[in-house]
Image (cartoon, rainbow, N blue to C red; front, side):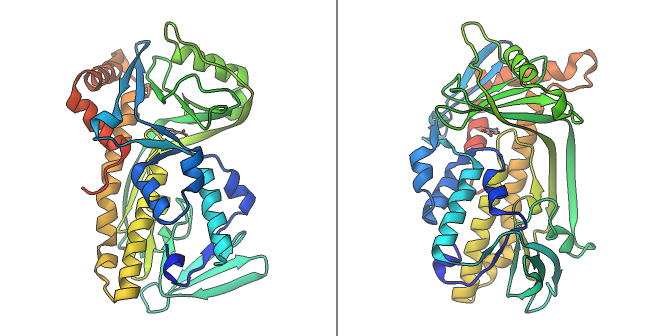
Length: 372
Ligand code: PHB
């Protein structure tokens, strides 16, 4: 976005190009994110290869119920397109334009974020160097130096961790469904997603301390069959191309700006993957930040930069609530004396699948609420 407007910028990437282009993440893109990528001119492959979905299935008690998101939201849809593919498209566009994108270059420390010329100390293949600039966007994830670079006395945070994790696989198997299946079962949650007509992406709720060595491919498929079971439906298996375990947590740090340091994406907030809001929130943050930088640099108007944190946090908290709600509706609670949580979940699911206004609430959050 800055490139397109001729504003000099440097991107520091701690990892290698190969690493970031192959890291598996979620793959569900909201319409607002698709539109943003189109504005940037990096949507060509997404339009060609992305799978547009107008609904999802909620499966519980062994039966499926379709939530028609498009009909409930005036025609809005989501697009299935892996985050790694977006990363590849953005890198290709950046390299083509020739702007600096330094791989294997780690940001080590931030300096003078209150002053006119903040600095980033970084280490790349040719050793350490200082980068002086006008503004720093910390898009460096939960473990980056951006958030700890904020004055500790001013930064607040709150979060929640869940007593489960997700085990995800990528399988060379045609998807056994046309739309995503979010499945509640007494054995735990399962999600059937996809990447292409030939590749499925599947997830299982596992214990938070589960080890990938304990989950053979055979055990994973057996568990998927058991959880997703439905009369007249079957799951197609295929070679497992990749597998990994993702922890589940919710977290928000605020304010998202101090002085000339701006936090964006996972540097400021984490959501559990149920509903796949992580990438979409990050894209939203950088969209807001990009517009604010342009207003400041091109028109000398800092009001959008001043409003950045509040503007983003409004949507962040909406997504926090939705992700928590979806997660706690669908995952089996390991401690559930008498099965109270399970009954509540089934009551919520039955309500969402029988009341149009309850279904609409899910649908509008799922496709993404832009302005609140
Ligand atoms: C995915 O395809 O990776 C995916 C889809 C939907 C989710 C989470 C992950 O809610």
